[in-house]
Image (cartoon, rainbow, N blue to C red; front, side, top):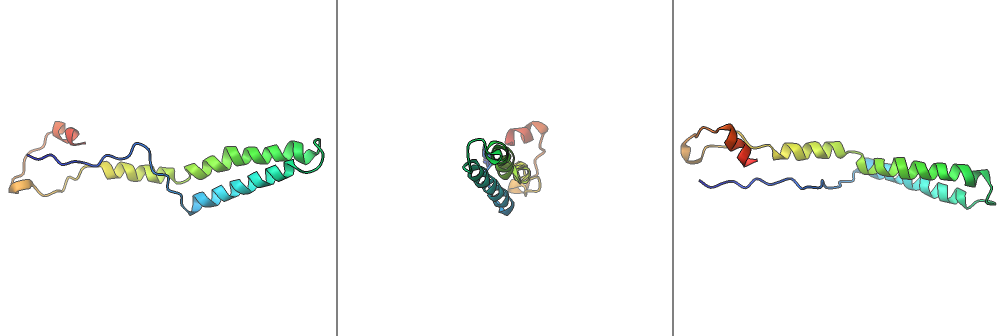
Length: 109
């Protein structure tokens, strides 16, 4: 009896960037540009340079960039899980239907 090779899912999921990811990433870039440009304005003790610039940069680097990477990741993980499930409705080989024990189904995964 020949054993079927079942394709294993990749260890790391593919990073698929969609429209939503690119939009969130673009907002993060705008916050980064605004933060660095506010940092360059005026003397060193300017309130914009000392308070608003770091706040904008933290928002960009801590919220928007990770969110852009992780947005939509749950749906990709669900697709990977459903692709691994074995096919139960495959036609029998040779016209005979052999009983399948639970241990055999675990070996195929």
